[in-house]
Structures are given as C-alpha cells and as structure tokens.
Image (cartoon, rainbow, N blue to C red; front, side):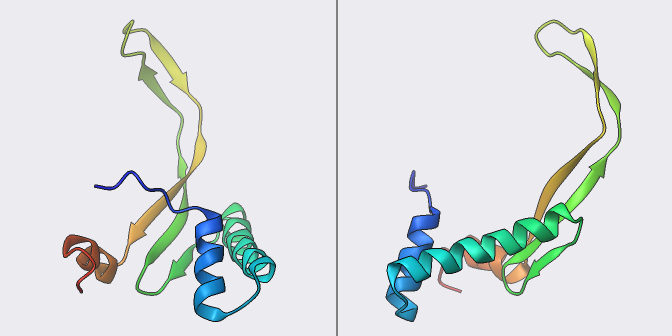
Length: 100
C-alpha cells in the first residue's frame, strides 16, 4: 500500500496534462465538478459516476451508544452520513491492481 494521497491539485495537474487546459482552468474545472457533487449530496441526491461508484446520503436514526473506555451509555443523535458504493468494475480494477 502506498502512503500517497491524491489531492485536488493532483487532479488539476492531471487535467492540465491530459486535456491541455491551463493550470488555472484545470483547477477551476476540478473545483466546479467537486462543488456540483457536494451540492447534489447536500440536497440528498444520489451521485452515480459510471464505472466508478455511487455516493449517497443516508439518514441514521438516534440510538444509545456506549463509551468503550468507561462503558457509560451515551445518546447518539440522528444524523446524515455519506456512503460510497464502488461499482463492480472499480472493485475488479482494485482487486487486480489496475490491470483490468
């Protein structure tokens, strides 16, 4: 496993190299795409990217949890959480180390 993290700047650089946009335009494009995805998720919409996966927001109900250190019961409030489900193509690609 690599300790490398892919950043927004890395994505912008890839767009710059592969598409030929200027660095500023590439960064603006990446930022715009990420904003569109974020805005859709905030509205509760599902975001499906073919051959990659599906992002969705799930509502979690209130429940009683337990502090693992003390064993004390604590209320966990209802909340919205982001989930990601990778596509079968992405799962296969990861399993085979980018060969598929």
